[in-house]
Length: 259
Image (cartoon, rainbow, N blue to C red; front, side, top):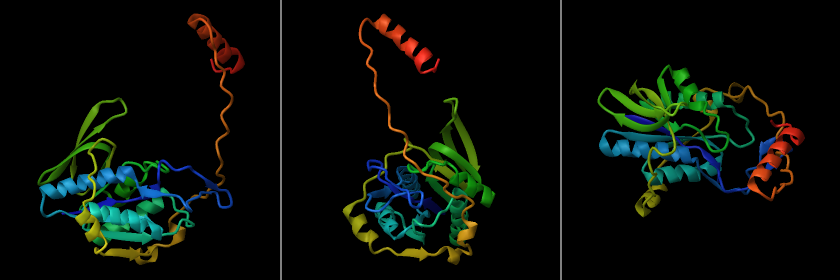
């Protein structure tokens, strides 16, 4: 069974976000990058499936610039078997459907049986790519998965609904699974894994190798990027709690017009 896992490089969640106003993009130069934490959950789930099933092979898919190789090596060090890297520089604007088209081609090229990915990324959090890939392939899909089990013929997943109920879904093995935070605790790579990762082959591809071109990969244009307005002054209301509460209501109702 060949399991594909999406590994996306994102800005470290602890770094300060800067904008490049000349091209309406987030500035990435000189910033620290990490593997999207939700994709780490997906990789860990694939590794656990591999531990239970000796016939499982894990192939990671990454779309991004040359520096994304470090995120790929991290996945290989954790235990992934092989990696494909579609090289695209930050200057190339690509939307969710464009990413889904690339992943579809990679799945078909590698004859992937199942795809695992994070239900979202910590940068744009679109929640769109997984369902789009499923639609392009005609596969079943489940997003927000918090538990995953595989048997001989099917996949059983659990997910929390918008009403905070637990939904259990049975899927065919050819499916797209988007995992959420809490499904597992990703492992740390061992020293042996780190050393062996550098010896593993990363297959580099251009989008043309997949029969695609830049014009097919985006229908969007960033009109404007801007910083949010600075927060206003904080007004501290002191005194008796009841009087302070009444004053707060007065401010919200008559000054801020929020009530």
